[in-house]
Image (cartoon, rainbow, N blue to C red; front, side, top):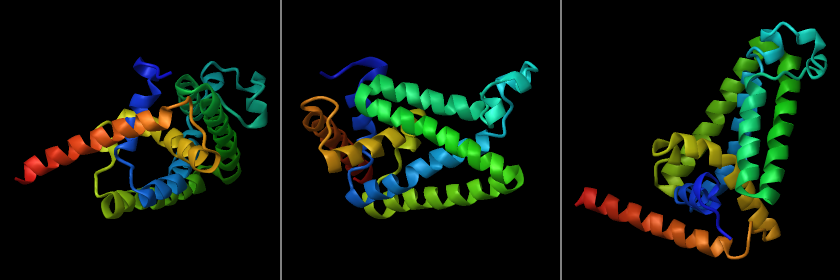
Amino acid sequence: MARKGLIDLERHYAFYGAYHSNKVNILLHTIFVWPIFFTSLILLYFTPSICELIGREPQCFLARRGLFLNFSFFFALIYAVFYVLLDIKAGSLAALLCMGCWVGASTVARSIGFSLAWKVVLGAQLLCWTGQFIGHGVFEKRAPALLDNLFQAFLMAPYFVLLEVLETFFKYEPYPGFRASVKQRIDAEIKEWQEKKQKKIS
């Protein structure tokens, strides 16, 4: 059954899906979206942690293992919680991936240090964003979703590509009829966009 409001999976998915209907564009996003998320966590690793701010860093269990409750952690946690609210099954998998990325990014950041980390992150981000913009400009022929709704586009991107993989290889649906219902909404949104585009041209 479809859910409404903040956790209306169909609405969020259809919004993002309307900007990603071309198979090559979807493939490029599948390749590049999660590395953007991962490398963002690497950079955010170098922000102050709660334990550090309250002067209890040495006593923190996670801190002794190189994991800090900083912006990197809360960034990953927000995504994780949002995905579980969207769909308990695929959302839980996405949440595990988010927190796994946090642990992995923390390990990488701690190993290479800030002076090298920001260069790695910059290079990876430039490569990944370029790949996605090529997907939109050359194959989708539509501007990215982030130009219309930055917050929703950034939140949905990792989950969207994960759900695409689960659907393609495992025929997964969050609930029966989800794919058909979402396709109708995506087709309607694309049609509306095309009509608006045609009016601007004429």
